[in-house]
Length: 120
Image (cartoon, rainbow, N blue to C red; front, side):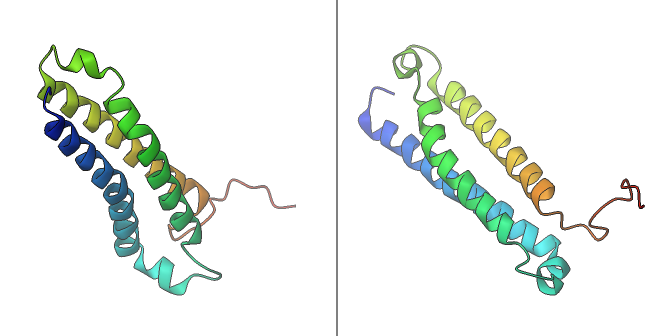
């Protein structure tokens, strides 16, 4: 990674993944839960869009920082495997966090609330 061009390529890849991954998850939600988005009561999916925007911002800020945190040590070791491991971990955590937040905040499943509540 002594070449500045390769550092630029990795940074470009991280930026594209930071934007593309949350957008792709939002698209998958729209395809899987199409009935929810079409027959929703009031602005269905708005919270999903906010979570997508939040995840894009968080990824754009933290992913490059984590990938290039110890950049001088990357030049000594096996750069490709270290970067691949870091990028994979970052975006796996991001994907899981976005899916969990989307389901918790705006539940798209058919029975929207379970019958855990006691009716008085």
